[in-house]
Image (cartoon, rainbow, N blue to C red; front, side, top):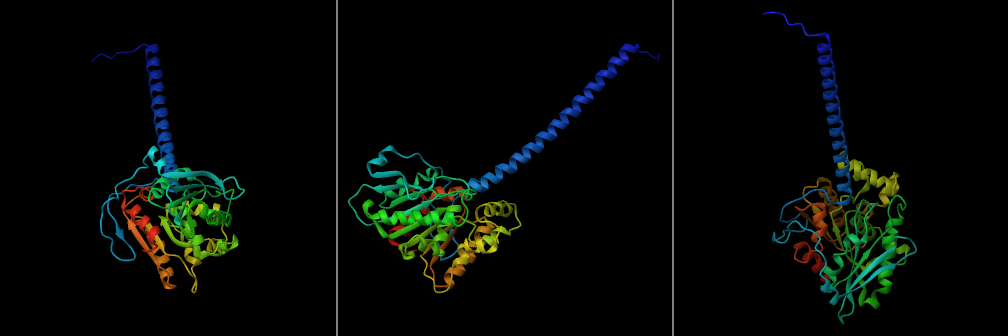
Length: 352
C-alpha cells in the first residue's frame, strides 16, 4: 500500500481540531462534576429545610397506638393538604386578628370564636412549628375555622424566634399568650379554667414544656391547673440533652437548632426539656401525643416521656401513626380525619 503524506497544513489543522475536542470534553466533564456537586449540596440543603419546616416524608394510611391500649379504625388518615377555607365559614365563626399579648413584634395572636350563644366554651391555644427559628401563625389558619365550627374557641399564637429570642424567652411568650387568653376568655364566651394547648414540632415542644415546667406560667401569674390538657404533634425534642447528642444526620441538624435557641449549657437544656421537668409530687394535665411511627428518635423520646409521666401518676396517650411530620399537623385540622376527631373529643370532655 502506498504511503500517503498529508500536507503539513493539514496535519497541523487535524492536531488543532483534536486539541480543541479534547479541551471541550474535559470542560464538559468538569462542568458535569460541578453540577453533580451542586445538585448534591442543593439536595442536602433541601433535606435540612424539610426537616426544619416539617415537609419531609410521606406515608400511607392507618394508625396504631403506642401507649394506652389499642386504636380501632384506619379510616380518615389519608395524605392531607391544607384545604382552602370556605368563605361561608365566616357566617358561623368570628375572628379577631393580630391581638397583641405583649410588646414584642411577634407577640400577637388570632382568635376564632363560634357565633353561638353558648358561654364558657373550651379554649384551644395553638402554636406553629419551624425549628424554633421560623414559622408563623398564618401557616396554621385552617385550625381556627375547623375547631370554632365545632364549639371550641381557637387561639392561634406567634412567639419570638431564634436567634433573636433565646430560652427562656420563647416559652415565656407562650406563657404570656396563655395569660392573655385567660384574661380575655370571658369576653369571647370562653372558660378561663378550661384551657387546652396544641403545638406542632417546635410548637409541640413548647406546649409540652410550659405544661411540665410550671415556673414559666407562675412567672406570669397563671395557675398551672388552668391547663386542662395538651395535644402534642410530632416533636422528637422532649429531652434536649438526649436529642442534641444523637449521632444521626437529623440529630446533628436539630442539635444546631437547639444550640441556636437554647444554648449549649447542660442546665439550660435540662430546664428546657419537658421530660426532665417532670418531678414527683407535681400535678400535670393529660397529654394526647402523636408521632410518626418511622421516626426512631421521636418514638424513643415519647416512650421515655410516657414512663416518666406515668411514674408520677400522670395520664397520657402516645399514638404512633404512619404519617409524615407535615401530614400529622394537617390531619389535626382536617374535620374528616380521625386525628382531628380524637383531638376534638379530648378538648370537649378532657378524657383520653
